[in-house]
Length: 167
Image (tube, rainbow, N blue to C red; front, top):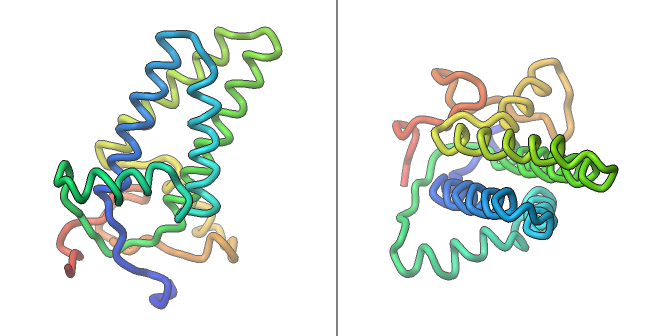
């Protein structure tokens, strides 16, 4: 693990994004409207590539945190697995929308249900995108996948423990 890129990541910001993902995906599912999914896909793409432009991050930093709706939860972590998870989410939405466009709406909406379930699980503390990232690191992929988990006492993909919190 390279410690120079390990930093404190605000997990409250990540949880707020998970809540918004659940809400937006559920609204799209209930209304059977792909437009909210398209917007969510763009948010995921921005969050995974240019995090400072992420609408969820801006919403958290400019409104949620200053108003005191959520307090920061900084933990020693790597942001890259979370960014990778956002890219996995963008790909999941793209696949869902593709099935809808190809005339398989039940399959597309089924994928949305899986996205909602996995986001709820992520909110509870285990992220499939982070797990995939760490598995790719474990098999020796370098580059973007160079970071090992910061909390070795946790299962790969689990939120790091608070004991590592130094803020």
